[in-house]
Length: 263
Image: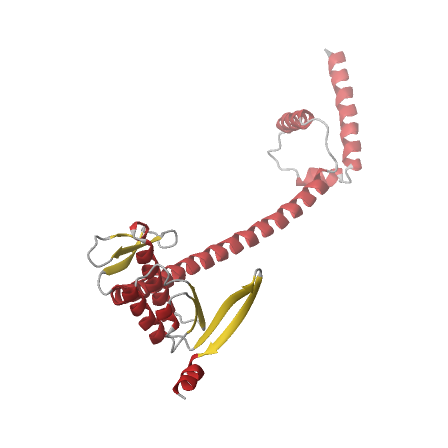
């Protein structure tokens, strides 16, 4: 029994020396630690907790000593990417808002233009045909994606799309639509290439009347073989071919020609 006590005392002494050495290595003073140690200190509980922590550390495996530096680098990288993502998100929101605004303005302007052109077509079509009715019709509800169909009913015929009309009726309907657009937004020049070719004399006369009326705002250049249409021109330019493959142009000022004829 006495021998066991002596051995236990020796083990305690060795353990004390070991702990004191460890304390000195950690740059702590034993006296200071003993003074600051709480009265309810439980050495066995601390030892158990220490062993638990050592076990958890051991289970972590090899320690990457560069992990802290790598973490800082990755953290900076993440902050940079987060800032870029925030900028892109803001730019996307701004772009979507701009697109939405453009879409609203486009719908408004398209509807206004559509209504004005439609009103012009309804007014000009009967003048060119001597009666009848024509109008524009949207093929869909979404203004940004819809198409436009020309519906026409010449005098004495049923209402139909422009595709079902004869050649002359198509030409005159197209003229009514073009002139309706020109009234809305006049251009300096308008070129018509043999528009009157499929028309009879009555329709040619109404076509010429409208051209003369609109010539106050727009200069018309038209190619024609119709004598009635030629009569409303202020200048005539004829193209002849005296030799095969050789064309010749002849210009005539109508006003000068009339004066010369009067003399």
